[in-house]
Length: 89
Image (cartoon, rainbow, N blue to C red; front, side):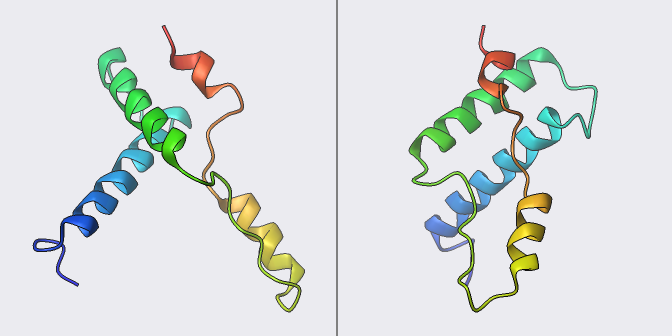
């Protein structure tokens, strides 16, 4: 698919980019962001997560190796438990 001609792919790319940046800030993987930038990505992520039907991964069925579900939980990027309180002013 061509993301230059398909607006839905452009939107999904933007959502993934915003979530990635928020997790970088939240997990302190990249430092040096100003408070305005942190607040911007917080507001964007909050809007995205409030509209999402699900914020966790679906577990795979019983025919799948049980270690796969555990591995996916361990490596998935999730914000800290109190992420809203950390950024709300």
